[in-house]
Length: 401
Ligand code: HEM
Image 1: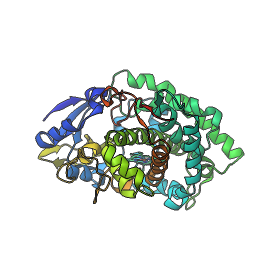
Image 2 (image 1 turned 60 degrees about the horizontal axis):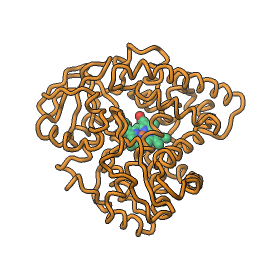
Image 3 (image 1 turned 135 degrees about the vertical axis):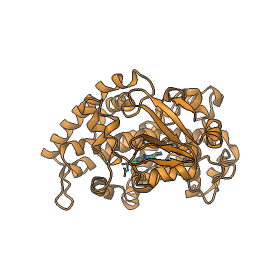
């Protein structure tokens, strides 16, 4: 079985095109070992059907407490006291408390606001010279949306962005220094949220945090740690992923003129176009780790009880046994059973929001700027050095006149 360091899987050069590597793994070593600083050795599963098994099968637990025992308490809380790191019944209870805010109907009410944020950002973009689409569009849009949802004041948003980026590697880092460097950021976020909770208790607003502070479901309140965990999860899960989707989907459309023409000519991009962009870009390259409750055999490899396993969603989304010509962007692909939002009980709670946000952001961008083009060859673009996600550090474009 192959053994690979997480740092190799986080390299910007690897991120630019990880798919030949995953194709080789699916063929030669469909379960491989990965070594992560502080946590040690785990297993990565690459084939579509095995990825579904890891995501859905109850022999895999999301209770990752054994993996984070070594972290200071505040950081542990951020990682473990939230629904993504819980099994039923706690997962069911926590998800129910917040899921009403994310129904397709509730999300549709945000459409006008998202449209006006897109318009404002594009109005402000320079008409001449290169424009970094990540910095000026893909990033501020989801940051504004999640901050407004949570009720984070406008003056605090830039700071929040810096803190979230800094604290990001705390969950699963690729470099030995990543975690010690991330801890102070995590601590500052915790402190900020604690203050915000106290404020919302005293003066509730109509934001999600106020609702959560007051939440009562079958007489069951969120305790302080669960509240903190929930706020952190929504912030982390809800924003960087969307930045990378908008950036990656823009790049994909710029690189495929025929598909772009199709995207622009449709009265409103069909759901299938957004689903294909989600599959093709596969921002969430890896799901979060699961722990085996018993020995489990996958692709002839027996993973012992108590080991951790990661489902490579990006690999599954490019598995040739499920998707014909997986490296082809085909906006009409049907069926498209991609796993970009995971599977099973932890299926992304923000999926409706993401679909709508991406649709508004991309339609607005390409409709307003028919001359939009890359300012540099795609091969020279910088990708972020992150292990579980895949995203551009920059996307310089031109043609906004
Ligand atoms: C492109 C954008 C996004 C992608 C690709 C994405 C992907 C995912 C994936 C793959 C999972 C499951 C992880 C696992 O099983 O290990 C997940 C869970 C989750 N996502 Fe997203 N996500 C995105 C945006 C969002 C947004 C905008 C929000 C909310 C504002 C959000 C909230 C959540 C939550 C709360 C969970 C945990 C659900 C649970 O444990 O029941 N996500 N997401």
